[in-house]
Length: 360
Image (cartoon, rainbow, N blue to C red; front, side, top):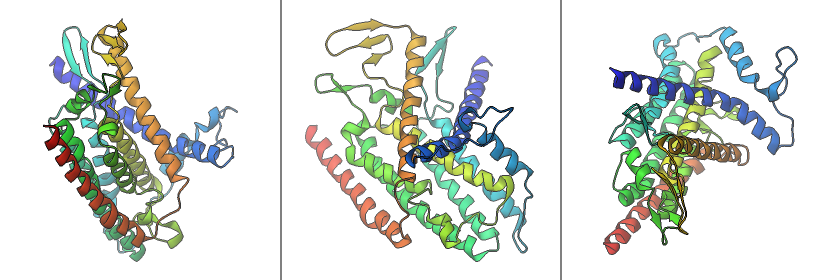
């Protein structure tokens, strides 16, 4: 019963933390864009005169959306119309259950893996959940009884399918190198070292092309600039153009949840996840021969901090790209996915196979 309770607390805590961070990203996006454009940024909402650098804006947004009238267009399929935003956000959130946020914590003789769902097929589970979110986009566009929404839904489905294939192909090289699809095992495998023990064996160093392919495809998967063709406001197109109130907010939040998920995957697959360079289960072992002994709790805390620092860095990268590059034309978007990224990922698989075979 204790193990079940621990798993429940870990699962609920992981989802709560990730959902809260995704909500906070609305503030992060405003502040980062303001800094990049030499503006003050979010600073209007206040409570008793305190503005807290605009941190009250997410609260104001939620209250505004909850108080707005929810509108369902005439002729819309009410059941599918109401279902679509839940499909989009639930499957994105469930994916976090398989993301390891830390190593092994030992408390009162209980060995706790800091991973809500300790699956040996975690990578397949995450990609399955991510692919299910396509249904939310399609259902929203189809059920709205609006041609522009329908076009946005079709754009979104075509884009997400195209770039999910590239995402899957891009990580095959990582799987071939580390020989596992268990994310916890993959994190541990990246704890090895190369070049005489100086360089961590992270995915970015053994699969650099795979990283850039995955990064590009993942940005397209989040449907955000420069890959935001399914919701091109300047073209009056958007799969959730008919949504209002909190259902609109759920679609917006789903994109931010996917951004957070993509950042977590890049940290896990290519930057060692919770691994800290030269940190082992019993402390630091430096390549020049030094040693710093640590107990289990500090090691785990450093690992969790390392994971969230890496995730924060990739969120910053994704936000910077979102506010820097202009939107692609749709034909450019599809050409990039099918004619450049997918062939490049297949070439990467072939090169990786040859190198592994020669090294054996």
